[in-house]
Length: 104
Image (cartoon, rainbow, N blue to C red; front, side, top):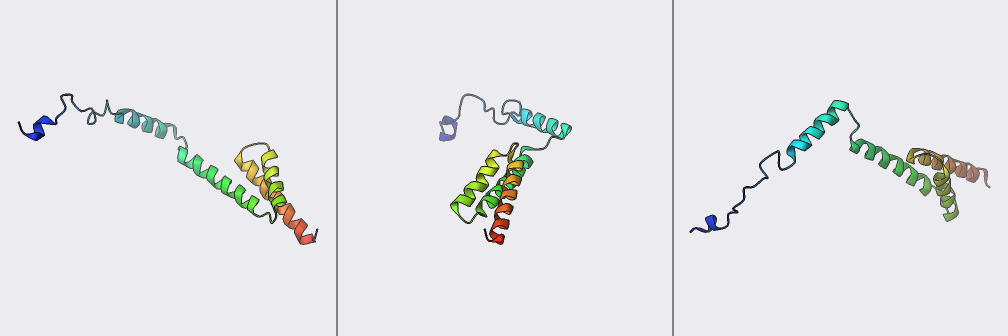
């Protein structure tokens, strides 16, 4: 018997059948997502990443460790999600810049 005949599995492969390998379910989910025009998870993740980067930049504006802690604490104490935290950190960093400019 040739080698190509001996290494065959006796069971049929399900990888080509779209009902058994999950392709039908993926197509159905994608059709429903487009039908209801939901925002894909990638857009939400991109927005979250953008606000997180803005928050990190605001924290990095502090010159000293205590200034960075003050900005981070203002962000942590703000109610709401990442957007409100980033805005609070940006406002606190602006207050610190004003204090520095005044010479305090």
